[in-house]
Image 1 (tube, rainbow, N blue to C red):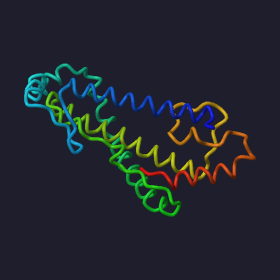
Image 2 (image 1 turned 45 degrees about the horizontal axis):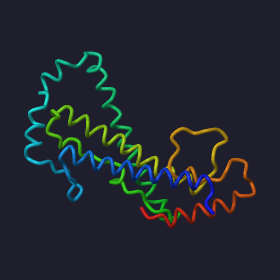
Image 3 (image 1 turned 90 degrees about the vertical axis):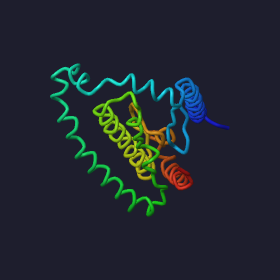
Image 4 (image 1 turned 180 degrees about the horizontal axis):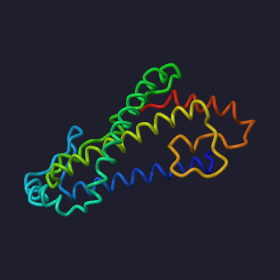
Length: 196
């Protein structure tokens, strides 16, 4: 018989499926489809999008000076992002096969597609590429870290943790010494069996 935590996880998955169904309705309303992982707009929509584009110089004139001055700071984060990406990817490539944990696919987390939108100017497209990479990278790293934690230390914290990764709900309760060893074995088996 499933426990209440398992029921809640099942409900979360159902809500995620409902959310995806709503997104599919929005795709239809916005007149685009996904074909082989690529977005396809009809010709009329593409023409409308091009007409809605704010030209680069007009965009820059509308930008507050302090916002423009922060851009070097924002873009400087590309250096630690790329280093993090490199180190975490190498870590996963070396360690996950040893631990028998399925590897995390980057393409499931890093999506760079918004630069195809015709209503964005060049700078907006660059910003979208940067944000897609940065946020996707954090998601990718979080999943690798989550699988690592599920393998090595799958114990819930004593206090609430905001934004816990997907593996956290199945962790062993804090203070459950009796359930620790069997719980670790159960979670390691679940990781090995996980198909991603």
